[in-house]
Amino acid sequence: MSKSASKVVREVSVEFSGTTTKLGAALKEVRGEISRNNAEIGALKKSLEFEWDNEKFQRALELTRQNILKTRDAVDLQRQALEKLRKDGYEETSEEIQQVRIDLEKAENAAKKSGAGA
Image (cartoon, rainbow, N blue to C red; front, side, top):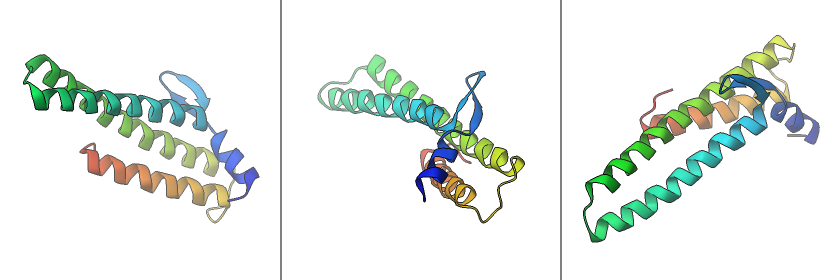
């Protein structure tokens, strides 16, 4: 994908957490939260291997639930971006639309794997 097409995709305006923001920034936030949660889940898992602690287990479950919701958010953001590009007149065969479709498919697959559905 060309730099200009990539920039267009990253800068598509989407609704996220009650505000309008750029797709790139919103996805960066979602991915960051998932990454931080995964790091904590990993630490909790290791701790639980040594000694069972119901509070740690509950925390790991809550973080997993949050990740599922964040994965759904990523799918929603990609769908919004696709719709916005279409409304802005981009052709279905454009680089921008094709990139968002690829990213949407990846997000949907991640959602399915996490149990979030798509």
